[in-house]
Length: 325
Image 1 (cartoon, rainbow, N blue to C red):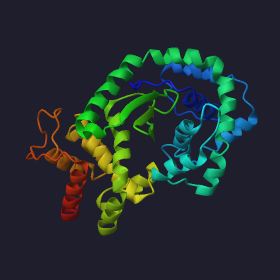
Image 2 (image 1 turned 45 degrees about the vertical axis):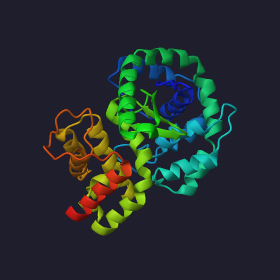
Image 3 (image 1 turned 45 degrees about the horizontal axis):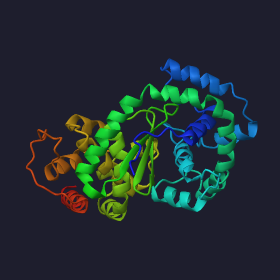
Image 4 (image 1 turned 90 degrees about the vertical axis):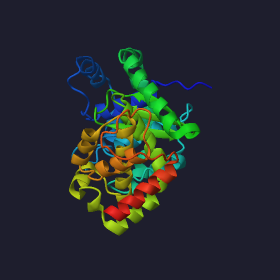
């Protein structure tokens, strides 16, 4: 069955509206169309109980995104609520735990809070239904741009992963922060949720699914060398990264997604400057081991090898890092 590449998701929309009416203001304020639409959301008559519940998504623990990680959790939770309103809480908690993300308050508090999500979602869907068609028309204005990036990302993913490639779909959410992109992995599909769509971000989120299985090896790498060899601890704290194996995973994801999307040494350096200091080194080794058809010229002048298996690729880079760091 053919998978639709762009998904307009009313549950994601209603959830984001719930965040907005509770004070979320990280959206792109320079877009007049979106700004005008958000004023209509503010004008909705939403019960105080609903606003207060959504306010709990703002933990304030991460300076650059005070809604991390609960804002992400709410969007992903929308995929675990059935059309009848049943919330598979256990499956969702397994998904959340597998991301390696830790709630800054406590797992118990998070679980108790998120368990009320289907009720709050139902209330928000009813209140925001009248604006849904208008919102879809706004999304239509970006659809060709979305589709071009999604198609390119899927082509690159199939070239890289072969028959193991997951279907990548994009779920537009321009009401959210331009700097936030999230994902949900369901079966053979990876739904990437974001303000806008670009190839690197699509590949970035899909690589998290594939690289999660190497976390034990990433943990061993940190145990041997310390996190300072791979990332800037203070910047990681500012960005909300607490799990050290997840930091190493993020470095690998950023490096590989950059190269696969035809990024260059400058783009690798940009990630390194954000605090993921080992991204440039990992990217250099990735280029040397797995040149892709999209890389017409190797910007770093490294020798070519051909490693088509992700397990071999990650292990080779880990071996090199162990010997070089």
